Image (tube, rainbow, N blue to C red):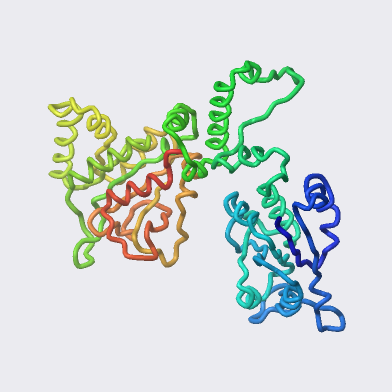
Length: 427
């Protein structure tokens, strides 16, 4: 039975919610326990102050460590100590289930700008965040955590299966629910739920959970436990497909050569093949390849003729992939070629392994949002990368793939990573 010790400047905040519904019944039945502790009762200030101005300046006030420390030391068994903070690790079903196994949990509710960092260090406390927004105080967050943990306490829900079938418990959002009447506002209950066929109902609910997660929280599918049947079901579902407005442009000029010289590089067969295959795999638009050199353009055209309309066309995968390639002889033609395909002026996005000094970088999430509005052309540099100062068009810049460590990625490897981060399976 977890016993919650809640440290708050407003203990009366908890009087009503802890006495109501399932929490109230669980407390009366002895499945949960609660005690409330006000740091003001442990202040040595005659005005019972528990906050002060921050060192280093800045807005607001900071909660002092000493009153909270004394409050916790007054407890016979504080147990696991948690500070509710937007800076903490996210509260997940797995974390809630782990907390439900504790005998004692102390919850510290912050206020103002936060709590003196030394409190956490002195108590070995952990910080937990219940949502990615800032609340007025930790009291609301504490109630969220209490309810999340309580649902994993045996007997709390009445039916223990309820906790395992809800949103997030299976790594997915929950399927939709229906009850009587059979018809509401001309909307009937799905016929399958009235069929009595439990196997079909279970399959329908799983499909609905997958569809709801794909539509609302697609990022959850990256870590959800999926079966082969789930993958087939997801593949058949319509989705936003932002990649249809994305195109790579592999640029062989102006690029940085050996000795930091700016010039033109030669085509590489592997780059053309692999980036074309990446474009096809992720459902992207045309793959533009720019070189100003006539002999390199001729080489590119011979490669394309071989695979698209010549002896190699029997290899369907290569034919379809290389069929996306569009040779570009002059950068001034690129925007017109893009507008001819997409019917809209594109946003050009430059890439670099180096972080820019005076330019804001876009994340892959930013690019995904941009691509839902119109075409985005991701410019990739060969050799040692693009010479950004020589680009003849306005552009925005993508955040470097690896900016905290060494980056020795080939251009085709970088293209694959960028495509997957922007337009992975579930987007």
